[in-house]
Image (cartoon, rainbow, N blue to C red):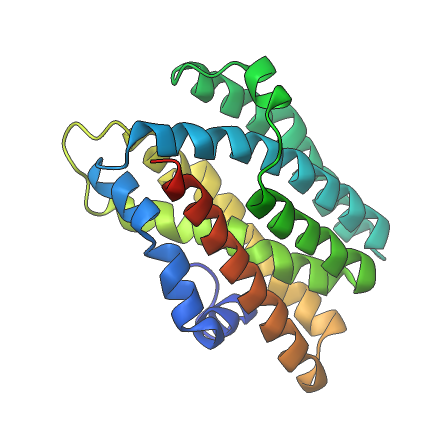
Length: 222
C-alpha cells in the first residue's frame, strides 16, 4: 500500500471509487500484465508518454514557483531534474528497443488525451495552490506505482512488457511514489482542512478519469 491507510492518497483513492478501478484495471493495463497487449498500442503509448513527460516537467517547474518553503522548492526542483535528466533519458533508451527514436517522438503530434490530462494538471496548479497541483499529479505518480506493484505480483513468463513492469515495480520508482504520498500528507497538514476536501476529491477523480482516457488512446491504436 502506498501512503498511510488514513493518508490523503488513500482517502482520495477510495473516494474516486469506480474511476480508480477503471484506470488501474484498464484493458491496456491487463494487456501489459499478461503480455497480450498489441505492440502498436504500446508504441503509441510510448510516443505519447514521451510528450506527456515534457509537460510533467513543466508541472514541476510550476510547483517550484508555487512553493512557499525551501523544502517544497527543493522537492519540486528534484522532481524536475529527475524527469528532464533521468526519466527522459531512460525513456528514450527504452523506446529504442521498440524501434522508436527520440526524433520520431519529438515530431509526433500530441494526442488530445495527452493534452487533456497534462493541461488539466497545469491548470489546477495555475488556478490553485501547491496542494491542488500535487493532487492532480497523484493519479499518475501513485497510480503507476500501484499498477507496477500489482502486475509484478503475478508475472507472466516471456512477457514482452516485463521490463516496463519492473521499472514501475522497482525500488527506485516505489520510493518516489511513497515520497509523493508523504508530500501530499505534508501539504494537506499545512494547507488543507475540511473545507477543501470536496474540491480535492473532484480534482483527483477528474485526473484519474483523464489517466484512464490516456490508456484508451493507446488501446485504440491496437
